[in-house]
Image (tube, rainbow, N blue to C red; front, side, top):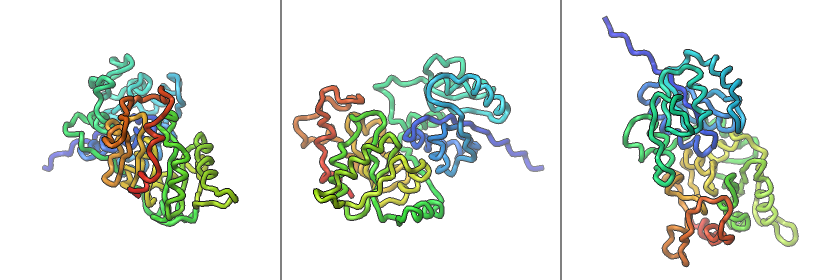
Length: 343
């Protein structure tokens, strides 16, 4: 008589709320799926498309939550629907509210880092490293698997080529026939390369440039478009400004097929890394030692580690939203020629 196979372990992954962090959880999910767990990801609507680009995910549930507040009634309602559906939950965010749903749903194993007074909500508690000692975020998330050797993990995203090509066709674009620029960084201006530098780079590229970003970044993209116009009003570069005009799913399609991506340290930077596209990632107030684009085709520009740059940037990384010293040298002094060298 054949031995009965053990039942598949049903896992709920509570996703981070930021696009870049969502991408950086992919190696964790790959590890869990490789050892036989069936993965359901619970994610906020604005990051859910990232998980649909991960083949190891069996199902994506869009959480009906908004920023801020416990929204306890909504969490209890959803927890009741989930009762008995999962054996284990991996809770990626460190917040109290992110651990509430698995607790209320009675999921037997609840794995997460200690933080925000949620000791009683977790059954498997991991020590949260001090902020200055935290490993790169991919390793931080991968460690939730309980396995070692997580430092070398690299995120991988995948889209159906037919779906991506249909998106490109609707916009009159072809694979590798354009560049993508993502000039935004929601955290603040100390992470944003100046728009004049983006515009100068666009003028030097030999293919059309697609500008991507949220509606909040429409003004930044409009500045780049305006700066690419000559004195007579003629365009000095072919620009397709799609800021605020695409869904995240469409943005993923556009990035997956680009000739190259130029961005700040942002969520779309990590999307480009996940697809393995050629990219230039520009760092200012943040650090590529903590959130690098893990991609063999990525080139990081960060003046902090450039020995030829003088005087040295002793202030970097400051991790501030706005430059405390008022000069933002870390970004202003990276010119378009430096980026062009890698495209």
